[in-house]
Image (cartoon, rainbow, N blue to C red; front, top):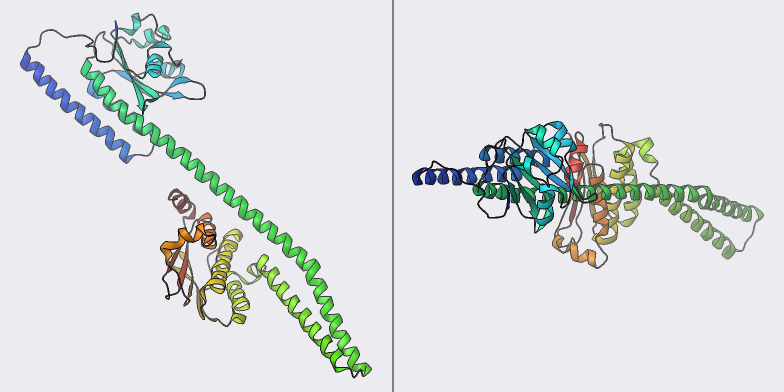
Length: 432
């Protein structure tokens, strides 16, 4: 006989009221212990299989069931499959699956209501009676695992004796099932979030790679085209000046125009050369990170009237080319912000190896800003340079921090572990 919801399923004879009260108290204690164990597993574990196994094991211990399992609903196929089981043969767990509304578990998943069967081997609507017979299953109870009325699966408990479960057992099963439903939903949300983060990392990496490729193309075109033309123009202007002087041309105004034109051509060639170096820092390959940073900062900041203090350790640890490039770009971004926004007249740039970490720091004595206002700055189209810098460092397994106060300048720091970067990289993106 099969019964649903709150119907009393079957009774046991030979008990007096004191024994019944004692059993009820023991049952209440068992219920609290079981729920507490499952709750601890959900809060302390991140692996869904481990949580489900603890929930199932706890349930079977409290209900004295010899076998059971948890079936999850595959939304794409609409089928229930066993995810974990205990006391059931591998054949049963692998071959026993059903559609919504099919069999006992299928009807529970469809209705969202628990069902108890006194003897499932005699149940005409049961799925795969051949497997049920081989397992020796008699009494059978199934409860839904759901969150906010959404059924995610079912938990089943079986006994080898008919009419072996009580209404209290159903309540226990349902209490644990409610917690497991929450755990399943949380795990799925975390998995979707993890995949979203991984997708974000992949897209970010592709974007930065594409950006570097575009910069490389632009640098090559500027070098092979514009830079060569300006170099030739400078040489031609210099030749014209020398020819005019040799020819004895006395028109000073003409000579002055030639010299100004030559100076302009030289300046344009210098600016284009600096732009090429910014687009493709080839000095990284020849000088290394610290020397390349020194050259870049001196070349870009000296003409701005900003005094620079360097504290650059040679980077002894081997870094991948993309890591060196990301660190160099980070310095570029930090120094660019100082030049454009800080109004500083002093700048400190440091690269230090400390406790198996590479620490990069750019500090200025400029006007600073209130860091808590950064979200509002982004809404106004500002502050994205800092965001880009942070993402670059995170992409290679490092971390970036910013400290600033009005009239106290700004300090930006990047920390790259020289060991175990892959693990830290995952943790940093998981913290977004």
